[in-house]
Length: 287
Ligand SMILES: [Zn+2]
Image 1 (cartoon, rainbow, N blue to C red):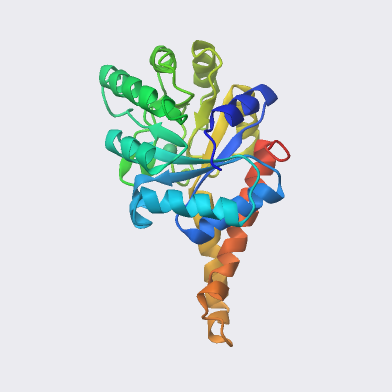
Image 2: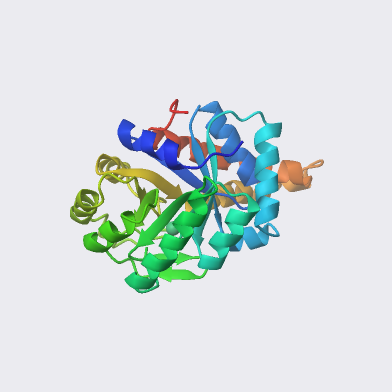
């Protein structure tokens, strides 16, 4: 059974570790992440962007697949199915489809409109036991057509949004989606400290977890970050392993073209990436 992310993130905050959100794209991704979480006895959040939801033919398909897979694989660690960077309409659709957690990204609205829409969605989500993540200050880089400038969130706005009854808050602190550029200045820990102080202990979310150095991840966790989103890193490791298989001509040997063989190295690569992240975030044996 899927659970909301509220309890697992409160536990993470109190225990000074973070739970990984790993985005899914298809069956292989989902299976790799669920099996790794179970093997490591770690809670896990499966992230689904609106684009990935469309790709998998809709949020209902995703919810049905994840629910069935948790059951078929005998997964007993806490699993949340979470909409990543949801629009107002997308959030409502996922609440309807059976997701257990929602991110409403109202960061591109004025603060007043972000407050109004977040307030409405918190009420709707909570009436169904679903957790809600909100965002203040857009996160840099591009994710599914959502382009953020990488702003540093205003602590006063963070306080305002976190006071609306949301369960966890994503706040921009110089983090960006995708690969970090060579000249990236790093996370702004002064800003994170101010946001942490202004938001009354609410679990904070760090987006764009791909390629942030381990020491920065640990420092962010010490300042209240309890959820870290990883997406691009699994894509890169899947692509590299698949490339290696094909470049070695293995798809041309015997039945190497069988998709179950062709996708296996990428599947194993995702598992290795998820394992590495869970160990870094400290969520191993925290289920
Ligand atoms: Zn994000």
